[in-house]
Amino acid sequence: MAKSKLEQYNQSFKKAIGSVIYKLIPNIPSFTVTDVLIDPSLRTGRVWVRTTPEGFKLIEEKRVDIQNNIKRFVKTRYTPKLSFVADDRYLDHLDNLFSEVESEKPVEVDED
Image 1: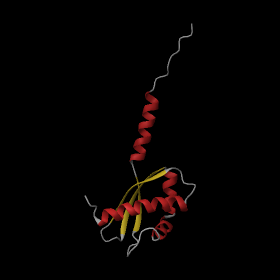
Image 2 (image 1 turned 180 degrees about the vertical axis):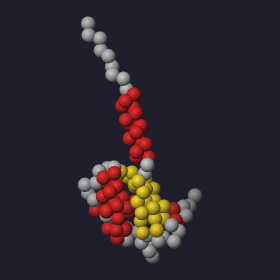
Image 3 (image 1 turned 45 degrees about the horizontal axis):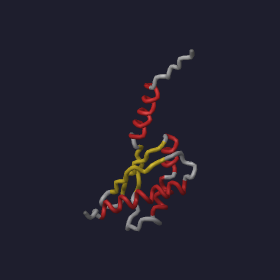
Image 4 (image 1 turned 60 degrees about the horizontal axis):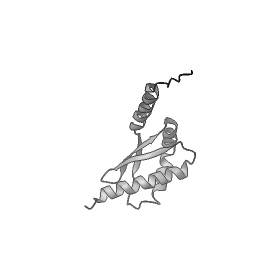
């Protein structure tokens, strides 16, 4: 099953954005580009990022630099204006981890 041209662009941008962020912000806390959705006109795009709030702030500060560096990786007529969206599943994952830790009962040891 062949992917559409737009799906191929989305995947290309996803890989490129991850590489560019690692290059521009080497000290960023762990992050993952979870999804990219580029408008069919290739002029705008949304990028879902899973990271800490501090990491998201760093990415937002470097948004223009990220866009400018994307040109080297993906050849299109236009470089899309990117907007970054925090992936809420990261927060859900943290909530689940805390719930698991709270639900664990301490093991009682009989000392005879």
